[in-house]
Amino acid sequence: MEEENQEQPKEAGKFIKIKKFTFIMGIFLVIFLTAGITTIALTFGDEKVESLAPDKHAEFEKLYTTYDKIKDNYYEEVDEEKLVDGAINGMIKSLDDPYSAYMDKKEASSFHESISSSFEGIGAEIQEQDGQIMVVSPIKGSPAEKAGVKPNDIILSVDGKSVEGLSSSEAVLKIRGEKGTKVDLSISRAGESEPIELTIKRDTIPIETVYAEMLDDGVAKIQVTSFSEHTVQELKTALEEMSKKDMKGLVLDLRGNPGGLLDQAIEMASLFIPNGEVVLQVEERSGKKQVYKSENDGELKIPVVVLIDDGSASASEIVAAAVSESADIPLIGVKSFGKGTVQTAEDFEDGSNFKYTAAKWLTPEGNWIHKKGIKPDITVKLPGYASLPYISPDKELKASDSSSEVKAAEEMLKEAGHDPGKVDGFFDEATTNAVTAFQREQKIKETGTIKDDTTMKLMQVIQEKILKNDTQVKKAVEVLKKEINK
Image 1: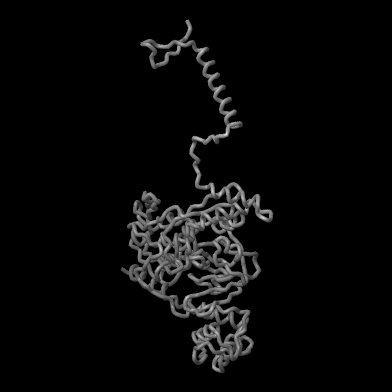
Image 2: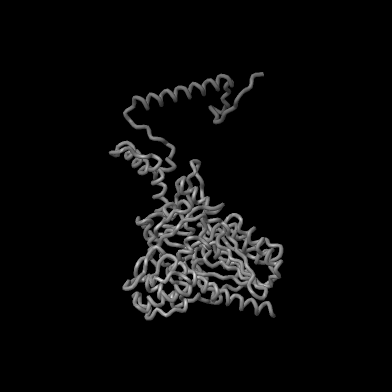
């Protein structure tokens, strides 16, 4: 029996019956004729045939046209890859967001290094802000920290070349370099009328992020300097070591911590927060929120305080806010940096990538600290001499000199116990006598001038004094002892 296809509508009240073979061949014929007519129209017709399908990215027409014109008509040969990189970079820069950036292959490699293993450079976290390169924080023990680089310093130039207008990843490539090489930085600092000139010797910067020590009376201090791939495991190891030393209270030091990986911040905060309590909320552009809660089996059973300062940013602020609001752990120090956004990175097949701000994070109670920072429960500032600027050992300060470096040296001499006379930035006879006395005390050649060993020793004495008189740590210990002795 022959199969039949039935098709509606009706004709004169009856169904039209068509044999299957005849029907299929008819369809092929229609398709063939239609294709032929279309081809003829496209080839010979005077009228343009418009596509019925809308162009998904019609807004890129100007971009494509510009690219083609430059590639074909620019008076010199152009690097096509460089043109594409520039277009992407310009698009991201138009966001006016210091935390979003395009990175070419070299910059992307540097970015991945900074969170995974070690790198060679000066060791400072930087960001672009309002067209300037600003230091978020130097890494603990790094050449940058030893040279006196401070949070919120503005880097004006690198090796004599301005970095104004560069992205943070572009500036990083100029600052980084091989171990043993030197880089000259010109820095603007609040309160200083003249730029500070620094020559810093690059070194290997290991990504060791946790440093633990026992203080007096069973109080341990654990400093976390950034959040890289193994930070939480390093912290757990440090906690175990301190527990074996009969730790009764803990100072968690997040000062100068510029942040890092979000997952590490969440996991770290969870160590101090009861299971099920909120760690943070991540809010998308749509307003949708993802709430992260502690999955800790049991928080620490000892009193804890957390130290923060103006170099505590991003992930360290997540931890500080979480333990404060969800575990009632007191914060001590000064107001934090204030970075309340979350970035994500996308890699391209050629090794380049771009990172962009995908969301903002909120504290457990729903507060957004962006550009505001976190105020500590107990405000404690470091002594004034902790903010003294770095003096380059390569620069000689001598009688009759007058500069901001001379003034800094006078203040250092005074704190070291040698009276330089009036601290006015003028290298007079009293300053010379103070320098000579300092050199005699430190068994350095008595030249009466400040350079090389004298400069280094002077700054070392001040650094040791800061460590011995760390007012923020002292306050933290005081608070903990009260809790321990309850």
